[in-house]
Image (cartoon, rainbow, N blue to C red; front, side, top):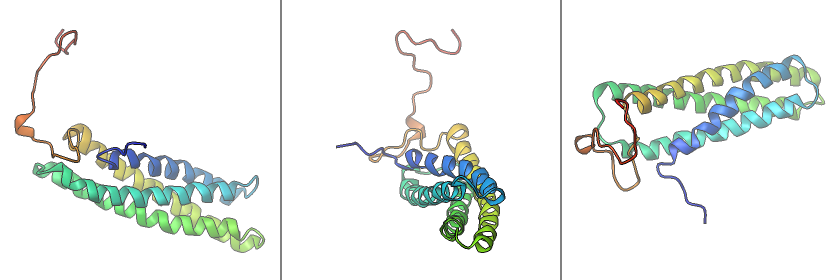
Length: 175
């Protein structure tokens, strides 16, 4: 049996980031040049990215309790991260529907082209939203250490962190 990571959110979030950021330029190219199965590729990437965004917001909500009490600046960043994550999910769902319909209606070139243009514009919005969500998520982890020590059984306890413990054979920054 494959072990499920805990917390799950960090393991899931990279899928929508990659799929939506890669899907957006493909959607733009597919709108301008609907050849070589590009509309299908764009639709596939954007549908998968949308599903990933749904999973990311769900796991984020589930894993939030593992963070424990955060300082006020980190709490504000968490709010921004959540809002951009939800915006990513919502925009990407609409984008996926538009891209899917554009690819599915290839026998109706005008309708397909209009849908592809709207999908491309929406995909740019989804790419921007996911980049903002990722930015704020990165601030939480790399600036505030949120979730670094989180596990499914305990929240991080900043009061009990060991600060400069050196292990044998480990070179610290001051060596």
